[in-house]
Length: 157
Image 1 (spheres, rainbow, N blue to C red):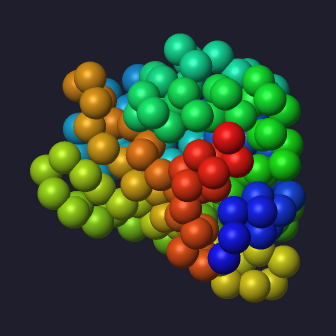
Image 2 (image 1 turned 90 degrees about the horizontal axis):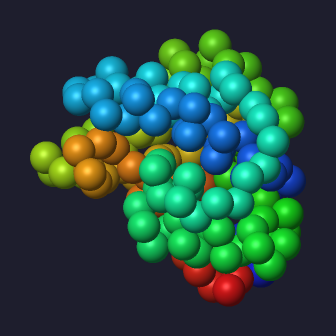
């Protein structure tokens, strides 16, 4: 799939993801599966306004991903790239929180998978997390087709 197809796939903004992750920074510092699950669950519970500070994004995303997202935001590309964490407007928070699943790839990397219905279609979103600065940060977001949001942001630049 081309990066332009990935960019046009989602109809949501990055704002809910960024603000929620910033608000839940203390959760990232926790250890264990509950910390990652609780933080990803908060993605779907809170919404806010868009912010584009690389410094703020670097608190919840790894440094290179945060830099690319801040640059994309500065260039007004965030609107085009969209918000992959919630692929549709129609979702059931209870369903998402019941289905969150943590898989440890190593002591330093985990995957947190959300499975839910979006407009009647089964949807899976995978959050890849790594340790940085004593806490957990998002290193990539993979949609239900296997497309990398990190790659889409990078290619859009």
